[in-house]
Structures are given as C-alpha cells and as structure tokens.
Length: 120
Image 1 (cartoon, one colour):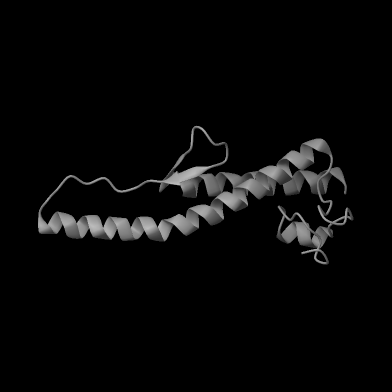
Image 2 (image 1 turned 180 degrees about the horizontal axis):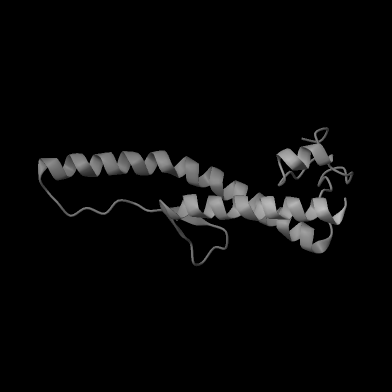
C-alpha cells in the first residue's frame, strides 16, 4: 500500500475515532481503571413525588436504551485503535486470520477491517 493511501486511511480512522469518542462523551464516562471502556451514566434522582418517579422511570428507560449503543461504539473504537496501532507497526491491512492482504476497496469502505472478505 502506498504512503499516500495509508495516510488517507489513517486520517479517516482518526476522524471516526474522534466522532465516536464525541458521541460516547454525550452519555457515558471513560472508565479510569479499564482502558478503552466507557460507562453509560446512570440517572441520579432524589425526588419522591409521583412526577419525579415518572421522570426517573423515563431516565432509566433511556439508560437501558443507551447500553447497547455504548457497547457497539466501544467495539468500533477498539477496532479503530487496533487499526491505528497496526499502521504504526507496519502491519495494517493484513487479515488477522489468513495473513493475506485485505483488499484496498474493503479498507476504503471499512478502514478498521480486521479480516478479508473470505475470512469474515
């Protein structure tokens, strides 16, 4: 892979990484103990009125809706970080299963790809 293409893919990965982190920051906090882990903020309420309970119930519902999104974004972020690390080590674009080159067309569409289409 030529240096220009590699640079373009690295920029695309860095842009996607920044966007995912921005999205996560909107509803989660970085886990200080586990690298790459995020925790969706659980709602905090102190009211006891019926209206407060309804608001709290809505917030808990929102929390449970965000948990799977957090998980999906964490996986994408992990794969992007792995791809960026592979670029630094000169091992980017190699299928983790068969060791063959991942086609450039695939990397342009899905730059964090870990496997070629055959092994996917």
